[in-house]
Image (cartoon, rainbow, N blue to C red; front, side, top):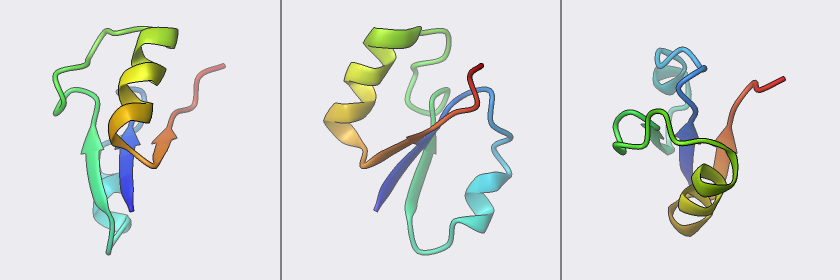
Length: 54
């Protein structure tokens, strides 16, 4: 399963998600991209996008 962690998530979480391909938005070059555009990018390449936006 391919997972994307938003930049607001501590990247150390990736180590706990054993057995999955995990990337962060900064690793993808997507840091600072907001809302709709980020969701569109994530949906094209990942199964899940993990964020804690309020």
